[in-house]
Length: 153
Image (tube, rainbow, N blue to C red):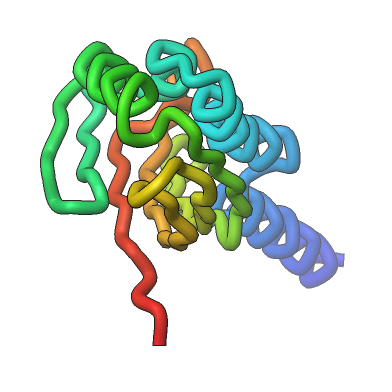
């Protein structure tokens, strides 16, 4: 009887540990929604909407290596490109992997495929994006964003 209790207790602890490292289905869904909000913001050409999933003090590294700090700066920078060079572009995203470091911190890798543009600004480019997301009382937010272009072979 004692060994049965020890076995059951061990299984419960193992299950709790695994759950903490993998996150819940609801958490994964909310994290995927962050990526979808950015895609929708791009489609609307709305910098504030694009930046909505970011934490107030988020770190953002652009595909060209430029660094932006904070949701407001991210929104403003995106509005500038939506009004100019990326006015006629479209983005399609796909979450590739979510890895929970803790129940409230996850690393997400997703791909982005940008098409469109006008004249010499036409593009058909792909990138892999890494985001670090953090769960707070207000839900999940993006704490850091890194955008890296995928070179064609």
